[in-house]
Image (cartoon, rainbow, N blue to C red):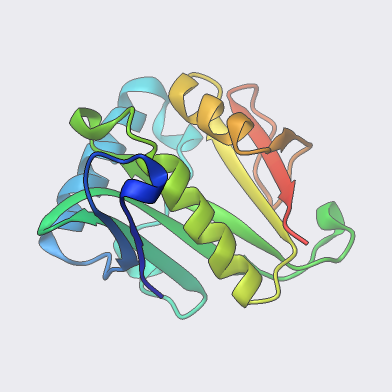
Length: 171
């Protein structure tokens, strides 16, 4: 899977979205930035972070958004089995979305999210779910613009008043 976007998307540069190992040094740096940002907003027990080892699992698709050798963003999809909160339907959980602050405003997050949704479709996962923090206003805007709608809890996440839960039907 590789996606290159450019003039057709009115982007000022070529962006390649491709599978990327989450244990690469540049990815670790970006994930460390994300973790620091989340730690500035929420207590440790309110952060639901997948670590590097979990991101290497076979049920994870981890994508990087690259401009040449520069990593501008990343995101992951975790294939999940059906559960009571999804009426028994399997789903794709969107995790670890991050775009470098200097690269924001160029629709990189939207392109990463679309690529993760495509990966969910390739795995016959008709539903995408995610949990994000209410104070992550940029993330909330991204997900709502992409067609995600609020829903109840899922996947064992607590309803702690800090989390927002979203879904999007993909098929």
